[in-house]
Length: 89
Figure (tube, rainbow, N blue to C red):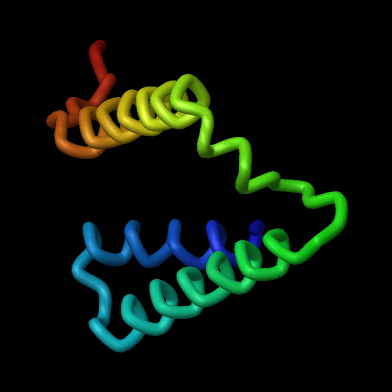
């Protein structure tokens, strides 16, 4: 999970910093593959760390989507808001 998320985060940052397309594609694809491998492994595990059956509950799914949406909104707000230097004499 850490490798998957850790590869996706720099890919998203590089998009904003106009990084090379090959680097962004490599980071994003390796992150997605790692997260898919984690999901496949957890599906077959006897005692999974991330129980995928939990997502079938509507309250859990909607709550997780709401938290993710709020995080995304704050991240975009911080990224898109103009920054001003704090140098006042």
